[in-house]
Image 1: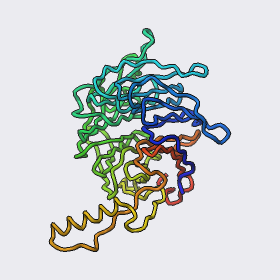
Image 2: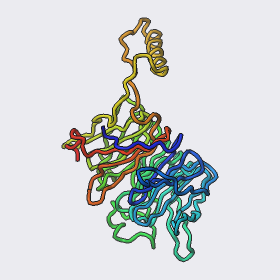
Image 3: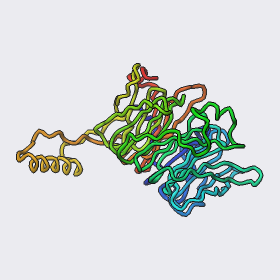
Image 4: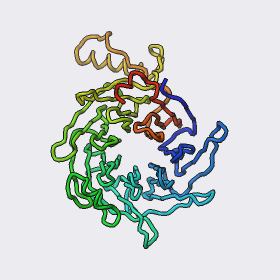
Amino acid sequence: MAAVAVHQFAQCITCHAWSPDHSMVAFCPNNNEVHIYKMIQDKWEKLHVLQKHDQIVSGIDWSARSNRIVTVSHDRNSYVWNQEGPDWLPTLVILRLNRAALCVQWSPKENKFAVGSGAKTVCICYYEQENNWWVSKLIRKRHDSSVTGVAWHPNNVLLATTSTDGKCRIFSTFIKGVDTKESKASTSSDSKFGEQIVQLDLSFSWAFGVKWSPSGNTLAYVGHNSMIYFVDDVGPSPLAQNVVFRDLPLRDVLFVTERMVIGVGFDCNPMVFAADKTGIWTFIRFLGERKESASGSKSGSQFSEAFGKLYSQSKHGMSNDAIEPSRARGGIHENCITCIMPLKQPGLSRITRFSTSGLDGKVVIWDLENQEDLSDYS
């Protein structure tokens, strides 16, 4: 079994993030607060409650180098939290949004962070030393709907976004005085801030989580149509693949190696995707064990099977008793998994541990170290 620890923190968890040493976890229990817990003598104890937002906290990211927490909320605000002694002190970020902030992520160098919003804009926030505050530059008029996901390229300049308009886009976020010329030279083109590098029209439905591979050579994102998309050689002529699976849609993804991706979502069970030596991506297996339920024990399965038979009869004018029954969902998680976070181990180039949280209020830690059938993709 890949899961090594299961923690029931709340009735529902919106998002979570880990401290740099993984000793503390911050999460939103589906309200306007952020709770910080620490493992003390084999027991999780609540240390802090961050209270500043007025509505649900929709995104949390904890910087690995500077030990700062950034939060965003449906109240259209963002705060950067700095620990001073035993307390966490908030600093308001000027986002200039008229709709909810939906997601947030620190850049690799942690001198910027990106905020996706329901205002069809992306805020690139950075710290102004002379004024002692966080300000933002907006990427406007590029998205046709809400921005649901943001992901930084390892070069600290390129940013990938997903949107409910079904598209994945890549922008340049070079800010003079914040980024160095070396990072700009490593990008595919000499582009200015907010310039769109490429637009990927692979999905015909809402697009959600997006991530870069560790090298930045491959991009993965998911759609609400039970498909996952992989893009190599991002630029004027990208190479794209899509993998269709028969299960419920995904919400987020994570590269654990260059050739292996973990997807999480409505199926309540992490899914493993991997590329063979020729670069072809396929679905490998579910990471957790599935619950086996007796036939007809779930009302949802009964309804699905009955509806399938009714639809078949009305369409073909005959019964279809051989229809495939609905497969049992889930495993450890009992509701949709909305967030997946890496637990990077010092000295290792690949990710062997990660955590997931979902609408069931659980945070589950997964270990890939002893999964022999997945060792070929490491």
